[in-house]
Length: 184
Image (cartoon, rainbow, N blue to C red; front, side, top):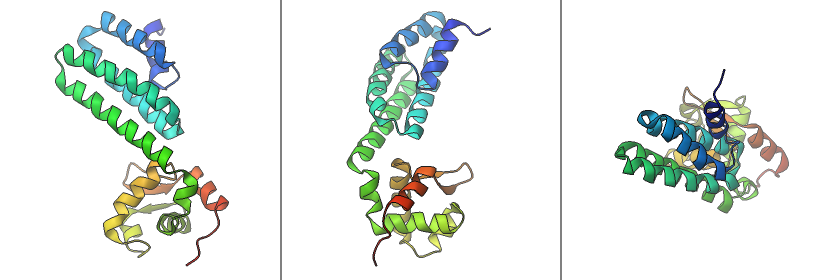
């Protein structure tokens, strides 16, 4: 049977715990498992960030960011500077993603021919390509490819697979369908 604390940590990890309750749960975790607190807090908060990024729930990232930063300070006071720094890096990455998504709506991204060319090439190849395959198409100069794919990933139009491939997301497919083809 799962303890109430474990159930609350699971809600935190899947980003279904209101941010105002997250600090309470993290305090309980510290009281019950001080020795494992830093590692467990990092895993739960990291999972929540990944979930929010995947679901494009950027508005919640700012709320969670406060929790992450407070947890980082608490962990640092406890003497674990490495995990505290990892938490700050997690926070910075989440905020960078939220800022990018807010300043680059999907409609704007789809209006840029180089981004659209990458998405169309991925779709043409069945929705998944390796970086090498994408480089070989000439759709975009190699020096810009990593940056452009990262930008497409930040707005949720592609995702990188575990084997290093680049996959068109359902949102990427919808964006291609909804936006007019670019004019050469």
